[in-house]
Image (cartoon, rainbow, N blue to C red; front, side, top):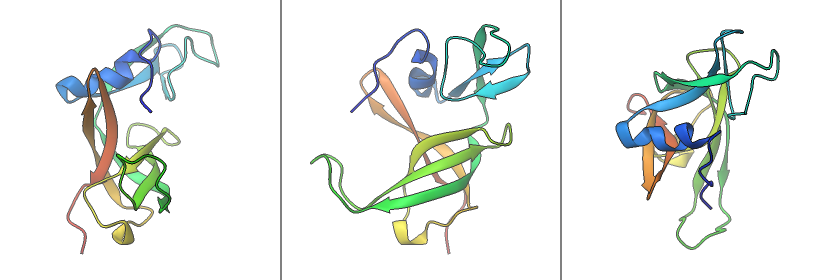
Length: 131
């Protein structure tokens, strides 16, 4: 299932068209927020999207062996990646381009994008070759 593009989340889902991972940011609190919201939950200020590095660390993961959709082969890795820009800034994603058995928490990862029409889904791959 792909997300609906709306005014709150569209920059996150479309930034991959130009190779950018865009995360909502509160200029008042100076913090990033994910998932995107209409306003900052702490100070109610308007949020703007900023391009981040796309680098992160695999926080936690699970390997899924159940095929829920015929177009998604198993096994696949469902993960939380903590982005380098801020402690606790985590994105739910998939880990790609590596054997699921080689995935370990704490490994450095880098964003990639899977294009689905107007939607560019951020996924992450190992930042360096796994041994």
